[in-house]
Structure formats: C-alpha cells, structure tokens
Image (cartoon, rainbow, N blue to C red; front, side, top):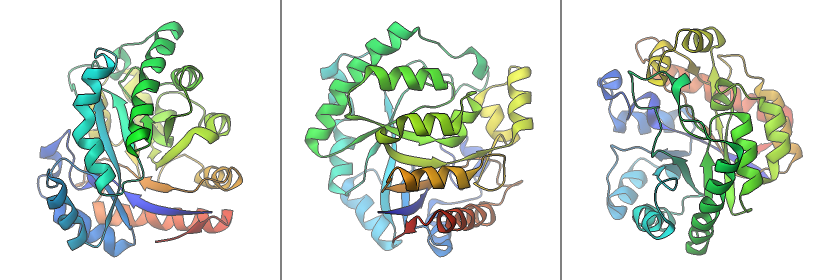
Length: 299
C-alpha cells in the first residue's frame, strides 16, 4: 500500500480567473512542480488538447497525468447525451493511464459566477439527490467499462457541496461512483472532514489535500461573497498553512488501506502566495504527515 503525490497546476494557471495568474505559464508550473518532487499533475485547460500532444507535453516535463476535472451535466442530460459529451475525455484519460476522471456537476453551478454568492447555490432535496445519484451510477458504470474510474468531486457552489449532500450521493449511488475526497471543499461547505472520510473511506478513489483559512471563509459566508471572491481573498491554501489536521487525514488513509494519489489543489492569488514557495510548503507537509502515519510514498 502506497500513495503518490500530485498537484493541480491551478496555483500557477487558474482556469476560472486567468488574469490572476497571467504572469505564469503552464510550462513553469510543471517545471517547478517537478523540481519540488511532485510526480503527477491534474490536467489544466491550457495544456495541449489532443491526446498525443498532451502525452508528449507531459513526457517532456517528466510528469504523469494523475487525474483531471470533468464538467458534467447529468442533472439535465439523459445518459446517452452525457456519455457522448464526456466520451472524448474518458478515451483520452484511458490512453494516458490516468487513475481516474474527476467528475462534478456543472449544469447549474455558481462557482464560476463572481457576481453570485456561493451561499445562493442551487440546493436539492434528499430525494432529488438520490435520483441524481442513480443517473450518475449509470454513467460511472459506463466509464468503468471503458477502463476509467469516476471520482465524484463535491465542490463549493454545486449541488453536491455539504456533508449531507455527499452522504445522500454516496447512499443513492452504486460502488462505481467513487469519491474525490477534498478536505478544503468539505470544510468550507460546513462538513466534518474526518467523519465523512471515516464513513465513506471505501468509496474514496482520489484525494485532494486542500487547506482553508477559516476567517476568510467566515467572511465569505457572512457577507454573501462569491466562490471566486473567496479564491481571490485566500480562502484556500496548501496543506499545513490553514486549519485542517492533515495528520489525522493521513492516519485514516493509512488505516483504511488507501492506495492512490494525494493531490494538492490550492488556488489563490500568486501575488500573496507565490506558487512555487507554497507548493513546496504543501509537498513538505504531506511528506511529513505520511511519514508519521507510516504511509509509504512512491514515484
């Protein structure tokens, strides 16, 4: 049993707020990430779109694809329509040996709307989430048949944000629907990080180590700010720079036999948090907590 450490390039190349990271390039992101010690990277929108181009790009930078975001619309699409919408990405990720595809519902999310408070996200009832979970299961079964596991990303501003949402989604879906367990989004959403991990550990397919700054999150909630406002203000940061107990998370991953990727995903203003400096801080913290948990790290 072992884990690998990857990173999202979002600290250097923010897809939602490109002006925020305009001074940085994707090449710089991969070079610096690899120098720090990260061996995998999640796909960014400003990487080559074609499979062979992306393969060559990653090979040149001596880094592998360790997952990547997939904007889903299963809430509004039927299975056949959604299958065709994601087919190309699934086929590409299979070809590049990605461990999973990170799927999130984006048909009605407010995460990319800077003028809409994250508090104003669309919320579904339990029965509505259970019905959605059944649809997601059908898609996840198809993905599995193609050789690509689904890791569902609970995310701020979407219909699956809170601990309750996650519980309903997992309860209503089949085992083919894995969980992309994201510490920062869960805590920002008001959830209990350890309770959720302990309850759904057998469904975890991918892990995002993301810390938060509680004072910023409190301000966002109390003053009805948007998700993008939260990012700019510094709601998120790397492991070890916020309030989350990652030693407890690493201990739990060890005890449940998790074997997969731990990915740093911490978008913030690079003028306040230089990407290389903070990404190294996060990497070093992961190495430390994994060592304490006796969770082996491999390349």
